Length: 374
Image (cartoon, rainbow, N blue to C red; front, top):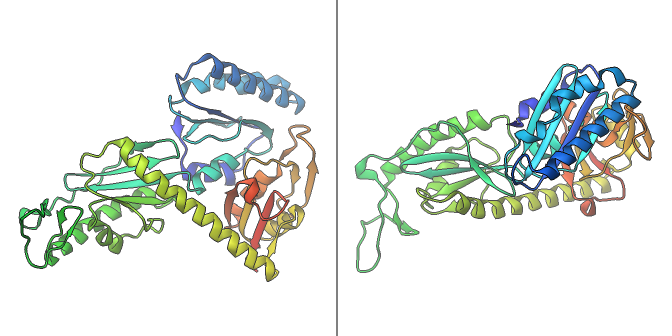
């Protein structure tokens, strides 16, 4: 079971598929992959998918379609997160999402991708770049954990004369022009230029790995590294706040405990700023919050930013050409899809942004709201 990627999710959204398309999501709090409670939950979810396929008239091919995923949950890691399986006559994707998403089974004309989109576009996923003289490492994080990525990054150890050295202030002296932060002496101006050059090489390597991503990046390293690295970085989601200190031998749990609060605060700020822009647009007549009106605007390519309530599903049918919606109280059959999910995909295909918001922070009673381009 592999981690989901940005390009893969885009292919699920944009690509045309032979239906029926089965989407199964199961969150787990961790523990042994084959524990009995997970086995039973997964078995029940697959049975629900088989029932929905039968209602869609796919009785004959239901078991053949679902057989390969009967034990897919057993491939998951032992840490908290969610199993995601997307299955159709031509797709067999078994994915690991390192955050908890709502448990759901959907059988429809398209894949249910809202949990994947919310994970990849939200600040619940982030990166940490740890800069140390003898090692440079890139980590991927979630609200629960941090893991080192297998990415080759160039080292940047300075030549000996310009090396930053520990400085002890008790009775000691330091060269003129060299300041001290957190017990480390900054290199002289010429060696700052050398650092900038080497940081630029590191940033190019980071950019090659993250260029399709929108997740925030937290910088970790000795204090004076931060302004130098920021001056050469081209990654737009590099956060202003970072982790200062020597991280040469920092433990993974220590990096996680210092990084996640920074990202959580950033996430809250992003949502607050987005809602403020929505309020201004609404006052000026440039925003909508009624589902049908938002859907029509999305079909016309007018939605710049779509807000949707976390964990809320609206079953029915959305015509992507006109935006016309038919809404039902519950999913009636495999012709029904999550209208909010289809709306998110439609906005993304038209070049808009999608933001998932806790229901109690939504600006109105509707499960969606939108800022318009014009």
